[in-house]
Length: 340
Image 1 (cartoon, helix red, strand yellow):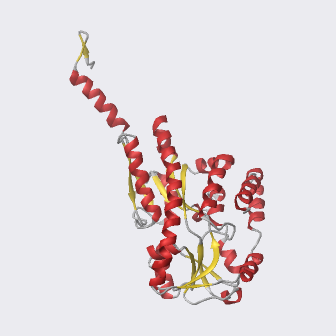
Image 2 (cartoon, one colour):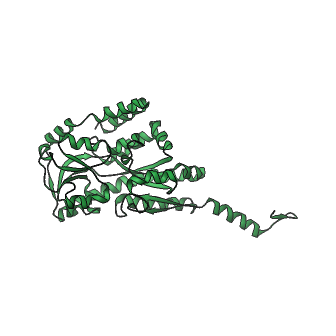
Image 3 (cartoon, rainbow, N blue to C red):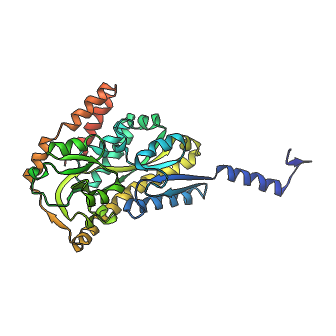
């Protein structure tokens, strides 16, 4: 049926057409987050979602479900590929086989020391190394931005004075490289998810965890582990916010531009808020009876020297997979970022 009769296009018809167009373009997207709602990164995600809503005039709305309500951390990749969710805030380190390039910065230990290095690294890798975008597309996703973490220090139930004290200790790990770092110091790697850390320490499933001071406050780890050591076991980008490729392709060009702009701003905001949260957390932990111990630099150097050649192994594995050039470029950029 035509709305035009005898050259007259009624106001009611015009309103219906505009209403249909508006309704067709409006989207409410479901996002699964592995984090609790209290973290610094969660606050950034809330801001990010609200800004996208505002800047698209309500055409793109994002509803975030926290702490694995829609799926556990290791289930998110499958859920986004199946179309069960539209976005996921998930760590690629949980998927080293499917996302080896994205997982490397999220899991290779003892190679960075500051959140700003993670910012610089991911900005360059996502724009200068083609395999990052290709890898995401093969998995039906697009990486929008990465979150940050403060340095993951050695947090234990009992103090450790050096590498020798790590022998036989059970340490929480993830991915494929963190376990090898623990083994290099004589420890026993134990794979645990974020939600399992408190109980794992409480029940003795693990003796130590790599964790940041602000997350110790968020997850109340200070109740079950009161010794923090001045050795960074891992630092780098944490969970990325991923959007399903089909959802991304369904956005208009203007909406895609807005999402990318807000994501870029969110990454910077996340970095600054995470650093601020870390500075505040130290005083909180001390008030809770947490003790901060010096881990001698000579002992940290000894541990690092005992580690496998993570960079070399990454290049070797990706060369065997036919992606050697991009792997070498990844490590070259990585070394440039952390050279200071």
